[in-house]
Length: 307
Image (cartoon, rainbow, N blue to C red; front, side, top):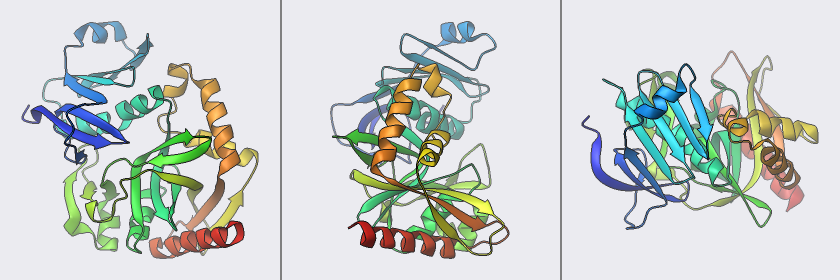
């Protein structure tokens, strides 16, 4: 496997990561000390114990088997072990590490991972969540074209600092469908495909990436609808809790780690501190620019009303 390195240093989610797997989408780090280690190891014993299961958790160790790719072991918020299968697609392996494995690391460190993109607007972080295909990354890219900075794509790492929610940035890359890239005029920024979806491409966004933690002020749930124009409606009460719980990244990790009570307490406190909106966009048209305008208008009205 030609993507094995002697060990390179990266940074993501506020962590210094020492990795034997080459992960070009992550930012380079120049520290001698690591918070997380990614190593190629023999996990054949774990694979035998998995039997027909995809994952098991024992003693704060999460073991996941992705057929045709690798067995991954995530331990104590500090270590990710990889045992590749023959002829595994390295791009998919990287994606597993930067998604499921990293979400497990964040949970083990007491951080909530939301599924979506986060953008800094008017000095605060706003999370854009939604089901797969809703257009979260496309909307984030359209907001970036208006001069706003990306904090995260796919995984949004949220922590409670003194009771106040904060988004810790991930890494300067986005994953967008080729059709969206063409419509947004971003094809020249393509770095590679994602392996799993040949039409979903990775672009580097170093040019407009916010690398410092930013207070989270709101969450917007993007969904397709039959409306003729983009509409943003505020959500309150139990609707907030539903939104945060439904759009937790890799939600199966919560019960696997026995963190259901922690999860409920976390999203309850989160709901007390931030706003939430349901953002509806027309399903039959590509209106990324108009949806981005709706987001910006909503944020600016919130800033004026709340100070």
